Structures are given as C-alpha cells and as structure tokens.
Length: 160
Image (cartoon, rainbow, N blue to C red):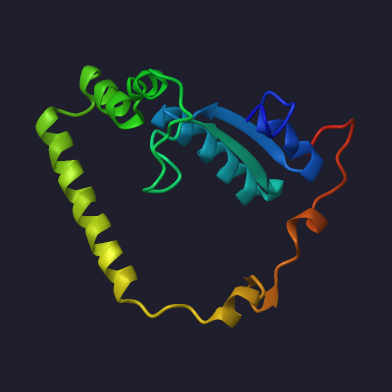
C-alpha cells in the first residue's frame, strides 16, 4: 500500500468520487457486517454509492507459482492468528450464541450450498462477450451513472 499511495487509508478517496466512505477491520466478521449493513441501508435510502475499505491480509500468493519470497519472516504466521473464521467461531462459542454442534451444522450446510453454487456455475454457459458492454438497467431504462445522480459535495466532504 505504501508504494501505491501516500494516504494512510484508501477510504479517503471516497470524497474524490462524491461517495460515502467507511473502513473497518476485515478480520472481524461482525465489524464487516455492521459497516456493510450501514452502507446498504444508506444506499437504499437514496444516499448513493459507498467506498468500503475492509482491511485484511492476503496470506497466499497472487497465483499458485507465487512463493511469497518477498514476505518478511513471521508476517504470515502473525496474520494467521487473526483469521476471521477462527475469530468468528471463538466469539459465537464464547458468548454461547451457538453450541459447537450447531456451529458444525452451519458449516456443513454452507459447504453444501457453496458446492451446489459452484456446480451450477460450472454447468452454466459462458456469458456472451457483447453482454459486457450492455447497460445496467433500472426497470426499463438505463440507470444513470451514480456520479451524475449525486449532488455536489459540500465543504470538501462527500454527501452523508
């Protein structure tokens, strides 16, 4: 990130696009849910687009051939301790929101849903290349580009 921008956070770019911006710990499932819910509710109320920065860490390389020799020793292991799934499980179990057997049942159900969705996607025909150029529709007419639908920001801040 430090090689990409002088900003400490990408969320500061939201104002440049006239959008709402927010940021959270991407390894905290509950924080991600709360931030996303707020942005969705805001958008549904007519508040426009949002730029959401979900700060996390990619523990695997960019591709299978990426040996990650550029990663400092111990960095990946430090982030493994912050694994979002393990943190989620720990929280719901410690607060007794779920029992271990109930959590196992949820995991099994989700694995089945993911497997079924993957099978359906793999069995589906590829989209037509020309469909990539199609307009996004709002009912029976093209939706206006969100930047044109927003009012101008005031005092250097995106519209709340």
